[in-house]
Image (cartoon, rainbow, N blue to C red; front, side, top):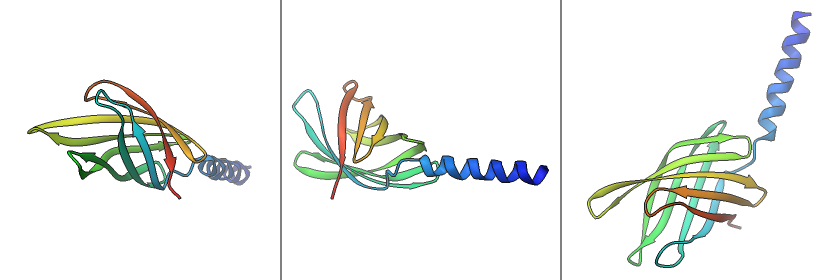
Length: 123
């Protein structure tokens, strides 16, 4: 009986892991802003519930890459923090998103207020 319960629990756990959406890879987005949209590239690597990677944005015509921190994957949901230096100040941007196939519906909080946008998986 004990063996059967353990086997069922193991099967359920592996089934739940299979339901996690695949976020690993390169994603691009146009993020709305007060001065017009800006382009961002997200490079993600998921390992279980942990999300790592970078965000590349363009500032004054130059690409700026920031590592993400506190990255989490929970089924089809992701969250992470991007920390940037702007005019000598540290700015933290908090992202949340829902993966829907080849898109991620995302919200960014911080900086100049919330922004909602869609990231698309790069081919």
